[in-house]
Amino acid sequence: MKLLKGLWIGFWSGLLLGILLKWIQAVTGEQVYTLLLNVDFIPLIGGINWSEPVEFAFHLVISLLISIVYVYLAKRRPYTFGQLVLFSLAMCIPFFLLYFPLAALAVRRDVPALTDSGAILYWMFAHLTYALALPILYKTFERKNAASQ
Image (cartoon, rainbow, N blue to C red; front, side):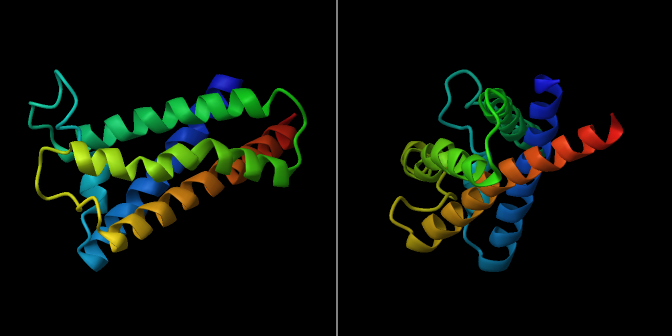
């Protein structure tokens, strides 16, 4: 059940993050969605010109893995909702900071600059939303499971 819950949470939170960044990019012109999907610096797969749906699938796979770990750790003991939020925020701090290596390593020139403060703020806002979605979806999934039993 942990795996199923992790997959469900990972899919929906990853979808939320992707849609939010795509919307921010459409409204502001900041290439934060492009940065999210960029894999051009990864050996073996970086040289291939992937379609947007395939790049988005890569993003979702990462989200699924993060959520499976989150659910596994959250299930270890009965945490309050506030503790789950703090746990999620602590777990997602590296993702806030991931902007910098992604921007620095990108081969493409259509990603935001390393020092683009607007893009950095949008990136952090969207990943904060992702971090808050994890405990909300976790608790929602638990309530639905409890109601069906």
